[in-house]
Amino acid sequence: MTISEAIQRLIPKPDEVLERFSGNQEFMEMFIKKFPEDATIQAVKESCQTDDWDKILTDVHTLKGTSGNFGFEALFKACSQVVTAIRAKNYDGARSGIPNVLAEMETVCGVLAQVE
Image (cartoon, rainbow, N blue to C red; front, side, top):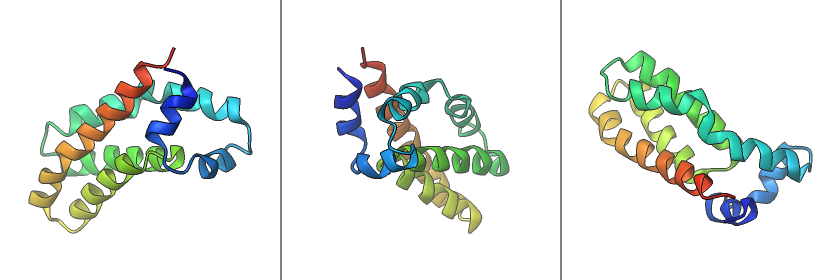
């Protein structure tokens, strides 16, 4: 799979993301390819296995920002739901949303792992 094909699968509005990278397609592609290597991925995996809500909030909020900047809307929405629930101290709601965050994160990383 090419990076262009991965972008088409993962990013509903690639033109908006390209604007964030000042129209530099190569720069955007380079950062998107490196997304699975981001330390936040592992941090989210680890913190979501605990009940340390402050740590989960920090890690998922960071992932929310990164996924939003890259246009990974499904991951962004999943993260937003968990962040909102934690801030409202709705830990059952947050707990029920964590599997969606992890699944969307795996989807993005899985597609990007296929890029040649």
